[in-house]
Length: 608
Image 1 (tube, one colour):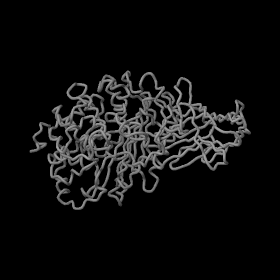
Image 2: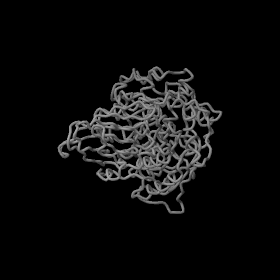
Image 3: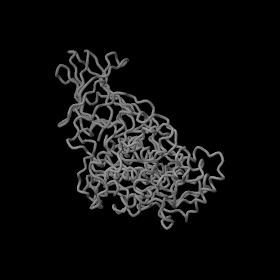
């Protein structure tokens, strides 16, 4: 007979609005699909455009970017120029937020934005409304609207998972558990339905084989039965073979934290994370006295009211507002402190939350062998290399997470940069939610303000700033000796395997094109081979000199073709000087104005 969750010595949580939930549960019939919060996975993608990718990992710095033996710097207000930003570029951020509010329907009702680098807060901004709508079709009277402020408190949704992961890693540091422990060794009833071999690391990296979601809030009558359902869930796959973003795994890890600590998860997080960091505005189940500072979320038919002041996620609410996958509320400033703790190697001021080695472990990918080229990347909790919202700041080291309500936190260890965008994109309905486009625009603006694109290539040609586009840069040359070589200066930052720049040649007037194999080189970097003429990925944020042998002789067309997909993008590609040699002689050199005019740009924009 399976042990009930009630048999486990796990402390009980309080604060559930039991009467309201019981009433809603009793009256719910035929719940619409839109009433089910199913986490915040990355957008669904089709097959990658290329399976080869570009191998950029050689030539990494001697010290890993997440080897953070930092000083524990605390955040302070700084002038943008003092922490590496071009202030004029950052001044584009309010327009990005305003444009998102101005579309029909708006991408969110309100937003709070913070940008910091080198522990200096360089930009804070808020726009829109924390509360505006009565329900999905009717606004409140204007005198009841609450403007969004820089200190507005937002429901973080799945960013809560990083608090759970941090808590779990603290217990790992203490030797109270191991990531290789089976879940069933801590929660025996989890072994049901063949889950005996699922480990804590499987759940933390979303390769535990669990389904993405099950309905807890209306299918089960109380907290114990809901938790029993989580532990007893039937897996969709064996562990370690497929990545499926699942709330259920993080709910389970939250239960293990409770069992080992003897505290409810909210008590544990408060005592061991938020209080030591001075994050006074970060909590589960915020008190009603803070309601005027809290961003409203969605009018939910299941409840019969607008959610404002308690967690939006239905499953988390049905578990008392405290769960491993959702439930944390916070402000942009508090969340920046949490991020700075990671950049400080687990330390913020005098508060030591994690050891530096643990932080590096958390931000090191564990699932590339499962997901393959262009697939999801996960550390021990953090989401890594997430082009769909890291955008211009994406690298193999960028983290951390998004939240379904419209929240996101990006940490770039290569520049010590933090971008917090908190929005109530499900207010008044999740049907309007399109936050990721704004997340990308914000991250890319910040990347440009940091000067990630080298000046040396900005005077050439640029493409890749739009989704679902094809851009070609073509020139025709005569190569009588048959010893042709294409040389070009290049910067590429392209979504791995989905946005691809191809170097190719044609000797029949453009009827057929052959990819050109080549090599990319840069000072102090190991060279990068391009065997199939395809360039994709983060590009190490370097300006490269590309050298490509051109086979054949006579009239030859050379082309750089950039194709982007429909979902996400990085900074794009810049091509600076282009030279074509024949037997060592330059038959084309775009440093010569007349030769530059011979290059035909279709979809490529001229540089600065």
